[in-house]
Amino acid sequence: MARQICNNDNVKSESELHEYINRIIKLINRVGTAEHRALTQELIKIYPPINQKNKNRKTYPQDWKSYNQAQQKEKLFLMNILDELLDYITFPIESGPGRNPIPIRDKIFYLVMQCYNMKSSRRCISDLTIAKKAGYIKSAPHFNTVLKVQKDPTITSYLKHLIQVSGLPLRQVEMDFAIDSSGFSTSLFGRWLDVRTGTESDRRLYKKAHITCGVITNIISAVTITAGTCNDSPEFRRLVRDTKKVYCPREISADLGYISIDNLEYAWDNEIIPFIPFKKNVSLDTATGNGMVWRKMLKLFSDYPDEFYHHYHKRSNVETTFHMIKRKFGDHLRSRTEAGQTNEILAKCLCHNLCVLTQELFELNINLDEFKMCAEIKIAHKPG
Image 1 (cartoon, one colour):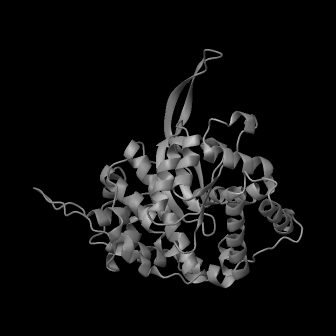
Image 2 (tube, helix red, strand yellow):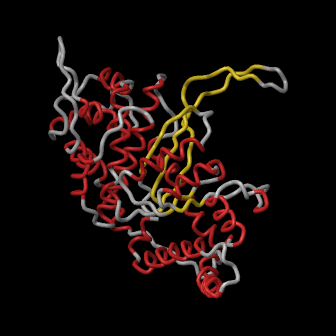
Image 3 (tube, helix red, strand yellow):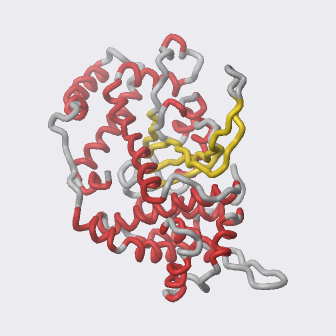
């Protein structure tokens, strides 16, 4: 999807389509007026060509030169970008009796490098030794230290913050976002009871990552971690709120799991159009007491399905993002503790963002000076 931004005509087209959606929503209850009829004629000319599958479809070839350069130098750029990103964040100075504690900055570097290499704590020490010689960290740790760092709950809030601010160079590129969740398996098993048959069994436990990502570069703008059995809908508000800290989103796409009156109204109050499909048993006749936003989006979904689904199908990019993370950094969590599993998923997401930035350095020539704004964004040390 990163190729689309290189085409100025496409960027203009998507912006125009967003304006058309805004006009549709404004005139949704004025069917039959002259202004509404004029808009309908315009839509007939614009949307059908876009929705014709596999016919006159515009394709975007891979920029192989930029891709090859990014892949060959990815690890070098990843360490350099992470070092620059950490330089703009103020970490507390830890002090106390006994041996000097490991700086939080170095702890994050240890965890990210182990996650990127997908190696054991012993086998990642050689890379950390190279990082020490390059001046990225103060000292190369013992392999047991890497394992202890992974279970450290004090770095969780910093990892979330780094994921958010790592997208600062792309905030002028990304305007439309998609939300979804996916599971990461663990080595733990839990007791499950089948109510229908009354039998017990052991099933593998998993953690669920809820993310918001841009639909052009697949950069992750916000992430929350929950137990595997938690519902998706309650995480919507937090993901949108965290995305707003860095970006100015105009559209949010999500699947049926996120549909609710509160979620639609929260997005609308933040000047974001929520493209979330409705269930089959929902009709305009039963929507009278569900609020203005619910009725407008339901009418858009019912009366303008082509236009609605054109914007909604940007959601497929979040599936691509999860595929990128799991294919490159694995879908299994080694840690057995709650904090360790959370930190491991966050490290995977941060590694993904750093790889995206490396790719876009070559393709879009983005400017990393945007990292200077990191100091203006507060770190949320408490969940909420």
